[in-house]
Structure formats: C-alpha cells, structure tokens
Image (cartoon, rainbow, N blue to C red):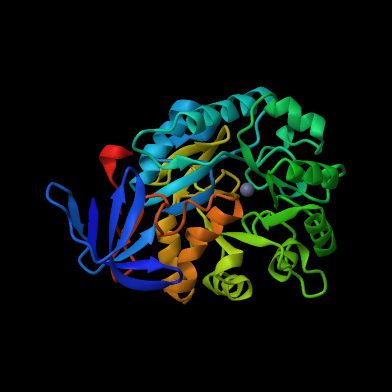
Length: 375
Ligand SMILES: [Zn+2]
C-alpha cells in the first residue's frame, strides 16, 4: 500500500514524503504514487509517526497478561488499533506458578504472533524482586529476595524475559543484575528504597533504566537524591515515565524531559485492564481497582497502574509539558525500541516495521496505518 500526503517523522524531523508498505514492512520512502491495483491512504497533511513501542504494560481493554495467552493475544489486537506497533507485556506480583504460567503465555505469542496485532517483544517481569517498603500496587506476600535460583524457579525453561524491574538495594540484587545482563535481559530499578549511590552502583553492575520515575521509589531530596535523582543524573540510565498528568505533575514531566532528552526518556503506559474502557471497577494482580477521573486506584487510594494510551502520553508531553514534538516522538518510539535492542521498530526507514500512527494537527490520534492483509 501507499500512504501519501503525510508529514512523515524521519530522523528527528518532519518531511513531506509518501511511504510504500509491503509485506508488513516499509519498502520505499519518496515521491512515488500508488501502482494500479495498489491500495492508497491519503493522510491529508496529518503527522505520520512510527508505531509506538510500549515496554511497560500490564493490561489493556479488559485483557491482562497475567491471565495467559488468550489475553495477551487480545492485548496485541487491541493495542494495534491505538497506534502501538510493539509491546512488552509486564507481569505483576504473583506466586511462582502463576508467574510462570503468565510468562509461558507471553512466550507462546512471541513464537506465534497474532496475524493482525502489535508485536510482542518478550516479557517484562516487574515482580517479585521488589522492596515491600515501596510495593505500590504489588502484593507484599509475593515479593522475594533476588537470586538466580529464585529467577530460575520462576522462569524454568522459558526464554521470553527481556526486561526485569528490581530493587537494587536488596541483598543479592547486584549479582543477579550482573548475571541477567550477561544473558541480555534489560534491568530497571523501581519499587525501591535505594539511595542514589546504590542506584549508581547498580548501573555499574548493568542496570540501564528506572521504571516509572518518581513512582514507587525513594523521593528526590536535594541532599539525598534517591532513585529519581540518580536516574536523572546518570547518563547510563534511561527513565520510564507515565505521562498521564496524574502520576507526575506536568512540571515534573518537563523537568525529566529537559534532563534526559529524547534518547534518555521513555514513555510507558503502565496500563491496567481499564485502558481503552469506560471508568468503573476492575482488577489488577488479584486486587480490586477503582477507575475514576482517569486514575486507577486500590481501595486504600494507592495508584494501581494507569488507563493511559501511548498516543495520549505523546499529546500530554507536547500539550501539558510543553516539549517539542520532535523531542517527544522518539520517547514513545525509537528510544524504547532501541533500549531493548529492537531497532526494527520505532522508526520510519526502509526495512522497518510497517505500522504507523497517524495524528492530526492537535496531536489527537487518528488511526493506525498498516497493511492489514499481510499482518
Ligand atoms: Zn510498578
């Protein structure tokens, strides 16, 4: 298919170009027109962005990756319609067997992807190696001390774990970070009582990201900058941010963006099953969650994931935080993709994934552009 008349985001700037998508990939970028019989979409001057890449997402549209393969497939199909090209389903605190079963479901979708869905790029284990002190919506009784033995007990013969969130101050955390890093797993810190110094030491061991910056971690104090301070100051660390305007004040979104730039900040949804659905009562990790006013909270008021979609995060960064679109777009596309070594996603270039997100001049999402027959 041909997509024409779009303002196409390529290498950090917008260009008036046409795009040919063939066999699910970008085949050509230029001034070519549709050939006889080839389908054509007129983007009418709208922005054409690479499909979004969400590396921290629990659930969407009533489907939760902790419930297994069918739910991961439902997430894959539903997320594609919101402009997401690829995602990393993220587990919650659960017992060993249930976590293993959830990972097995994710692995099966990696191996046999949905024909018309967002790609699954492996699993993100957010639990169980977290601090009970900053558990957030994770269940304390499921948390464990980090060790390779515990990791093997949970994952068994599965190989889909691509990311892990860990509290780096826990005994055993640094050796586990070193070993998993060797195996190609991306390590992130959160649900953590670590000092800034402990975060820098974890970066020495191979930690490369901070999960949901400022949420479920030590606060930034000017004499003890904690997890967020180290995350903002250490150039080896990228920061994942929930830009829904609820988890972080717009000023904080702006501070983080100015500190880290388009290559050091990653927009995540961290969404639970109510994302894409009306407000009401839902579930996350076996706990009741009440969604109202855009916020998802446990009965005790603790935030329990979000209902954010990544295209809304992009709009919020531009319209609420006042960051330039050219700086924001990589945060939801190439930066998360590159951070986990999936650089065939998150960019508009020949050979890259042929899923695009079309947005109007007000930064409202319009549609997902892709060649559905071949997906
Ligand atoms: Zn979390």
